[in-house]
View 1 (cartoon, rainbow, N blue to C red):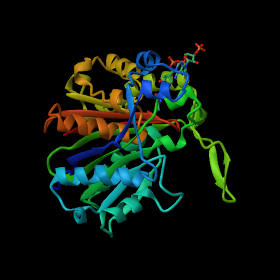
View 2: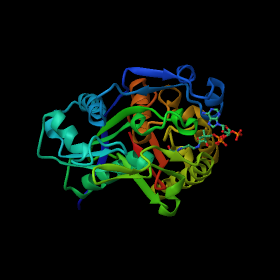
View 3: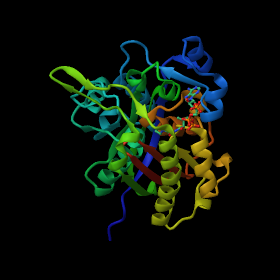
Length: 323
Ligand code: UT7
């Protein structure tokens, strides 16, 4: 009788570029906002901004090296690299391939996933299915973004919300439970509420290269789908929310996080919140929060984690796992 192959997180890593901009720094730069407004409406106090010339694969490299070290493996053991980003280094090749080159290895399958702020849960789910199928045994799954490159610093509706960063995990084949359940969804008809509606044609940007967001519409959508998709993953695993040790949600707005936790009946003591330090880092936010809580000892081996994200597309998803 064949036993199920699980995909289990063997190590985590994250990286924030050194330059931090507080809310008051944004005010000092002439943005028509205030620390009070940003903290009260979002919970964000600071965000990190990549240095000139520092690109997504550079941030991904730092986070990946830490995850590889935490897993106690050599990079050449990795046979699959999946990198979630909406801010790739190039149109092509994929940032996953550029990361592979910077890691100094070759041969592993490497590709990008584009699901905006849901990118990490999409990438983790894809990696889990590769591992579960038996085709691959050791995946590097990364969420990395340089959102500062696609922000209009004159648009206070968006520029105060986002930041740059990267998070990574090593996901290995295991006999012991790791990923228990996952659920992914999208509603493309809602693409207009959060988008960067530009493209390259004839060597020029056509349309708008900056983030456009209908904040209240995104807020409403997020609150509904995050609770629903968490329940869907719990149902698949035959569990209820009381079995969750830690909720690790996409870090966009603390009010969305509080509302999701309340809908699931989870106290905020069981929720990892790191957005105060780094704002919304899109695909990087979940692995950044996961790594912070794994390293400070809150999350322990054997804990049951619910990771969930929501973002442009519109996309959303959840992964329930034993750490
Ligand atoms: O990662 C993908 C998921 N993204 C999200 O989850 C974002 C979801 N949306 C949100 O987090 C919130 O909708 C925001 C934080 C973006 C906005 O908060 P809100 O409570 O929905 O505010 P609002 O957009 O309804 O704007 C309220 C007021 C407006 O002024 P009036 O019309 O009431 O005079 C805005 O012009 O706040 C004003 N405003 C600001 N004021 C100071 C908007 N941005 C700012 C700002 N500083 N940065």
